[in-house]
Length: 296
Ligand SMILES: Nc1ncnc2c1ncn2[C@@H]1O[C@H](COP(=O)(O)OP(=O)(O)OP(=O)(O)O)[C@@H](O)[C@H]1O
Image 1 (cartoon, helix red, strand yellow):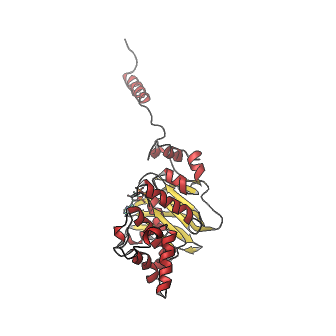
Image 2: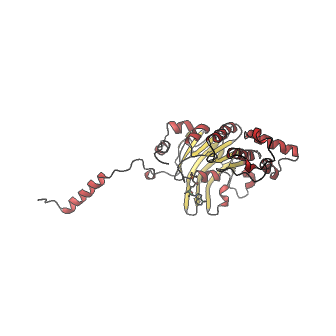
Image 3: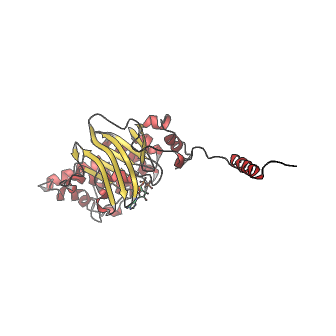
């Protein structure tokens, strides 16, 4: 006869059952992340961007949680991480593309060449000429190839004579690796080009106003592998003249083009390191889980 107190045996049973349920290991949501704590090398000497304690909210929801990061001059830095971790939100802070979203609130210090990006007197049009952007989907204007590239220089008054404008258009198309394909059809409608050509045209359009920085939000996600390879080659060449920040879902792409890679997770900046280190010897367990495909 079992003389043990029934409530004790019931509790023991419950404990046995709990012991039998496998406890998930490496479940990323269970990892406690400390706000503002980033491992690796998030800071640089003489940075182009100095970003400190940046938080971004959409209404009550915080999308970026107290991130501090430097972006060095003429570096290519890749932002990677699972969908919804805040990569695009953080990228868009760098030229105030979030301004048009009413519920979006940006806090912290964001400096470009030691000037406050969010200063109330900041000229946002001038900021976006200095910090250009290339989007996921090529978005040329429904105008000629020439007028797409000439658009920015015209509104910023960068060319007084037609020959000056012609030079800017040619140089920008050359830098974007599109001159040979476009030179005999400059008056043709830009939307008639292939997707890869359209994206290089968007890069030429950004280059035409002499930016210092180019932000790229998944610039190859709508392109085939050959068009992607051309954009990646372009990014590597452009790093001599520009600072480039690229959001990408492709770890191979980050590995191919970026000097440093920043890993985002649930609005936190978990790790920033030399790209090679991120992909071969990540410091943080979450980075390792992501790059080994355990989630994402
Ligand atoms: N305009 C918006 N209004 C409200 N919430 C938004 C808005 N844009 C983004 N968010 C939210 O902010 C969080 C971060 O989104 P964000 O697009 O920056 O992430 P992401 O890492 O770039 O994602 P993905 O890789 O899927 O593009 C998500 O929870 C998203 O739903």
